[in-house]
Length: 424
Length: 157
Ligand code: FES
Ligand code: FES
Image (cartoon, rainbow over all chains, first blue to last red):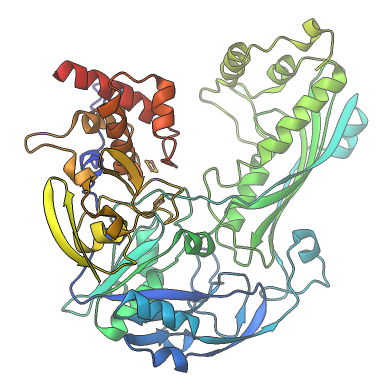
């Protein structure tokens, strides 16, 4: 077989424009007669709101202040559930929720107008702890339960298997939310073409889906919306949800002029998702020889005020909960839970990144209790070609984890525990 | 308003500016050098790096009037008419470019270093780009590229 690319050194197609500083990110696009837009965001985590834009509208240079009343079509969006509002209508559910979008002829007017929009907040009890949020009596963020997903994995009989274990370790692990901090803050520009097509130019990971969401909010046919994705300055999952696309599209449609918005770093932090923080309770047991027999895990992912990809993320956390180890008896329950925290969504690894904090610590503690060195312990239990995962998948292709572990152990100079007199 | 005179990429400009205009806004919005990037606006990320009289500065922290009488180089002024600069070539060859948003700043920091120190150690390279954040590459390839650029530059002479 002749391969054209594999094994060859290829220079990326957009490399040259990037080293020359010629690659266009949305903030680099300037159009004749363009207006500037800026979002007013909630300063409260959970409140009923009342908005008065009249003072802002009177400021010299302000063309319009958009709120939920100005959304022509559906005032909602979301990759799995339509639980985000384009602009909050009655209630804000997190700090950073979009309330209004000011459009003006110059940046100064935009800033001034944002300051004088009156938002009357009537605070509601908020919940920030996902364990509290799971309780029946907790205040609800959307609908009548904060638990939006429960993934169950059952293999064998863990209860019976734990009885046969020589060593069992039990522990709870917590990982925090994480910000993607891609280097290019969100920016975009939208305009109308002669035939009425709305064009939104924004760095996104999901242009074909943005097109649907913009069309639904504008109440136009999909073919009347064009999404242009120019250079993207990093994303890492943080550009999978809508941020400014719909705001810009509505503003361009209503004003008939190009509208541009560029987020500051601070607004970028507020606008997009985070990595799910997780609480992971693990119980893992093995026999005298160090063979894993059973594992039980409960994983609770805090998805904040919106679901975004929570279901896929918590499913993946559950599927990967055993780590790369063969365990005959497994019980996993993972949950995605709404709170009033910043919303969580996609971030590199998509739920598979948090669980190693737990399963690897469990491996270390088990090997310590057994007085076995942690490398040997892992090598006894890892997936090999032909292994069956907890979800029943048979790994038929190459599974070279043994080589990886040996190589790592070698390079960091791990001496087997037995040779160090059993002390870690 | 204030009158200033400055050189950007070998071209002289006489401009009238507001006192509170930042250098980055002058370069991007007025002069069109959009290779100057804004990642934070507060001196943390280095995406807005330009060379001013031979030294790198964060153009988001410099007011435009402070550039009066100075000579500025942005990424657009690094290449010659015939070819891209050896540092740019090295970034391409090594694969030190991913999303590219840090790249202009990185290349300018590298240039300021190599103009003064043609044979830097890896440590010196790391120190020279310590004000430039990259969220994509993990930095190693960027350090490799700058090492490679030092070789290209020597060979070229
Ligand atoms: S934009 Fe100037 S240092 Fe980040
Ligand atoms: S290449 Fe993306 S930030 Fe450096």
